[in-house]
View 1 (spheres, helix red, strand yellow):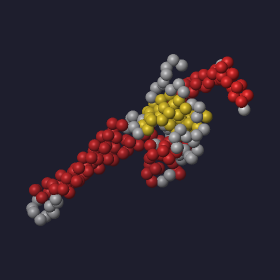
View 2 (cartoon, rainbow, N blue to C red):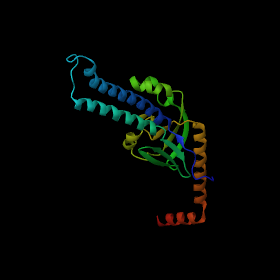
View 3 (cartoon, one colour):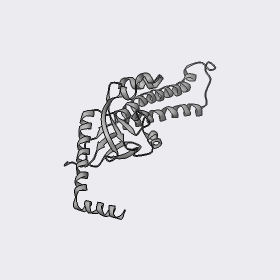
View 4 (cartoon, rainbow, N blue to C red):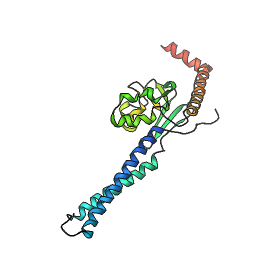
Length: 217
């Protein structure tokens, strides 16, 4: 394959999660600023004694919390599309703002397409998890079945949503726009890598090294 790397495919689950959070945080920040403004202005427009006069420190804390929350919401807007997966010649790269991980093709046993509803049945969940999953139920994810985790599971849980992991086995669900293109491109790179491994094993120097290794045993 001529290209050293494939296209970047956005991790939709990451974007979907942050889209929910930034909207909530933005409204909370706006509400806090309105409260701070109200605490500051109400005593001016209404007779004294009708409303308590709050210290400037309390008003400042409320306004600061509102401003910080709005800045955090803007930060989430900026990074919400920055998580992606990208095929390379010998590995699949997964990137988020806080995680950069290479998954070797040697580790991947199989990649298959599965509907999210089959991986995470909506009826199994309650409350916000059910509301979170319902819009995703009909979408298709690419599931990587691996020999083992590229990082420890607890470390992956720190950076990725629980809905990347269908169960406790080393499987990872990648929900990306254009999943067919992603699957085709990844399998093309993985197939080329597997072919290069077979050719390397048939090379004379490899055969000699393998025979020497067996002889030493």
